Length: 410
Ligand code: GLV
Ligand code: MN
Ligand code: MN
Image 1 (cartoon, rainbow, N blue to C red):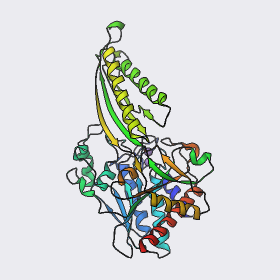
Image 2: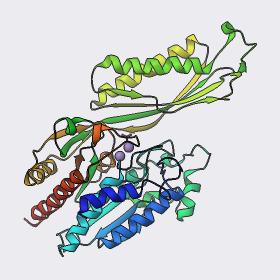
Image 3: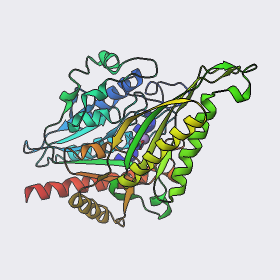
Image 4: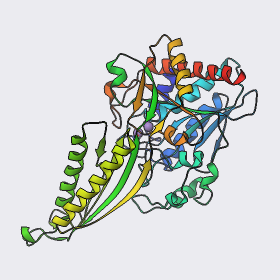
């Protein structure tokens, strides 16, 4: 089996129990039993590929392939946590391709003038704790300790979730990495551009800025049969109006601005009770941080207006804020050259999705390689990548690494 095909097959293997915590779908959240099982399997594959493995203080799995010199390492990574009811390639494909790149170098007895570390990041999606990219932030050394004071939906603190891994929030920041040469992440595109142009891979120019908020709307719970309509302070109907207002603000912008309410919970959640409280999240993105921040202000103003008109209270907390992150121009050129060397037309494109690369940019220059995915579908079990495309991506990565080696030697 060629490396790219094996990378896809391994993502498929990780798509089911024991590597998923849910019996009927793929859901692998940070620090769960399925997460630990996936780490064990991936560590075995890293070792087979000639790497020494370790788990860092933030529960990232790292495989290291020594170079001929002991300078700053080339880091290759992506994440192994998933969203609920996920596809199998968002995250793991980048890790598997990193392992395959090292396996190919190892098989041909090649060492680079720098060590290579393949990192399987733990928390990129933010699907368990109300935060995201905690573990790449720890590696990049940009973690705000207040971010670690989080609980999952069952009330388990991050510190409690780390305990089975014999780790703690007190030492989490010790995952900060030594200075690195560069960070390379391969990832499915999660959009339709490459497919629509008949291209297998593309060079990412930068990643859109993100903001996330947690909103709580408080009304008054009451009897569904006796609370007359004019007297109601229904938290759900207020929240529904807010959700539509958020959509309208993003739609009317007619740019790359995107705003999403992806979680909403209704309390107490009974058919015969007027909802007294609703919690929901807002995710706002744009390649232009000013546009993103202006949209966030408009959204907050609209929420305040609606809450006032409907006699409900509200609270809004910013839980995630990442600036737009440009990729490194010299590394983009190197990636384009590696793509052209595989007989593929170089194509540059921007990423609307977030990636660990946007955090790693604080540590070192970053490069991202996008791989075509069917229909641009992602965050969905229908996600699909062709083995042939993964093989092209792998050859591009190997060529990029060799070119970087020549660059460092020169
Ligand atoms: C990560 O998948 C994100 O863009 O939310
Ligand atoms: Mn994702
Ligand atoms: Mn991802």
